[in-house]
Picture 1: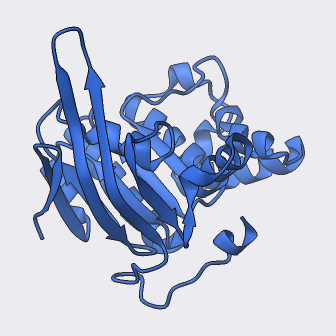
Picture 2: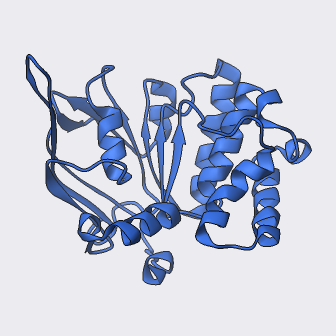
Length: 241
């Protein structure tokens, strides 16, 4: 895993060959009345530091694809190679370690612990990694300040506004400085002003940290911020430029 954290690429846009390669990803579901093909032979490459948005109609499989990319779900077929390693060949412990340390997740519904303070929520990934409580708190406070919540460090999540909660969720996703951020409708529950602030924050953090980012969204303004925009249609990705 250490070689992954040290990975560098001088040309972040277009350095695809050995960073993230997705080949032949397919996924289907069976119900009592039908066999539903959700994803069909999905192929794409993503370079280090590159940003990509995935748009498409509701219920078409965008979140399913994101969950597979984040190893929260398995495909029926296909491979995902991360820096020349097939991540689905990992055993469960190695896969969990990879997911915790190399991928950050931001969801429409924040999945925060409402009765815990903002700083306590953000500390969680570091504590899972084995970082001391003192060091984890220091790092959590540092990133909370970076996302503009200096005055909310010790506030319970339940008293924060929707925009503030999403900033906490972003901070939690980034505390381990993941190489890839996956965001599923990160502004779906926010008003226009807060949405724009989150858009700007995500792009600032992408530039500062050099992380790759894949965003599933219905918000075409957010999609337009990404270097690439693809549409999921009938289970396949169509490049929109």
